[in-house]
Image (cartoon, rainbow, N blue to C red; front, side, top):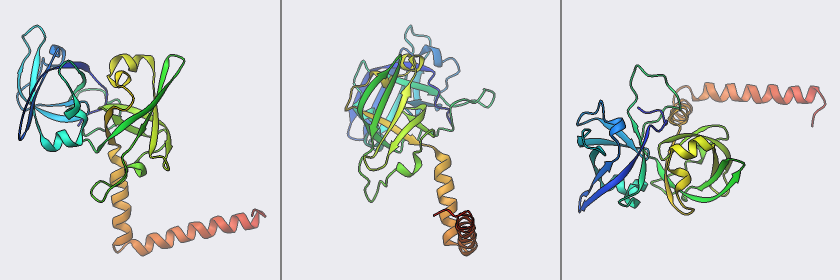
Length: 239
């Protein structure tokens, strides 16, 4: 589990590809390797990856991780080049203060940076989600204004949603712009998206209730609320 509060910016120092995926080496990250062990999880641009090798004693410090083709296809990590910076966050410890929101670091999809505009020292960014398919349904039901979304692993507040255009926006204050890679990405670049997991659980619970034995009870409850609301409007003369 993660919080979406980026701890450090690392640098991609090596990419070794073969038919089954690739080995990614992230350097300049001594700051987060003090308590590292092989097998630990580190979120890289919001994707939970397993440390397969590390050295915290070198000047730059590095760790290696293996990315399967599935990860390369579903995230922006297949677009990364040597020299690129990436957002890093260690798995959340039980003893730390919780900030951000619950982030699994299981990327749902990628979105495209559509445009940007400065508002004083803050930066507004707009993103467009891909068109839904049979295997990858729309994530728009989980995106609401003032709700949470993890973009490249950073917990951010949604400022607007346009269902028709499949777009949503966020605002980065100056401090956030300096601490994450998002503001440095160009328009048209892909970003990793993870929607709030709470919304997924709520949807599944409601659908299960409607389809199961409690479905009729819930329908009756909704009908009662609608009838009471309409009755109150009628009593007040509202049309």
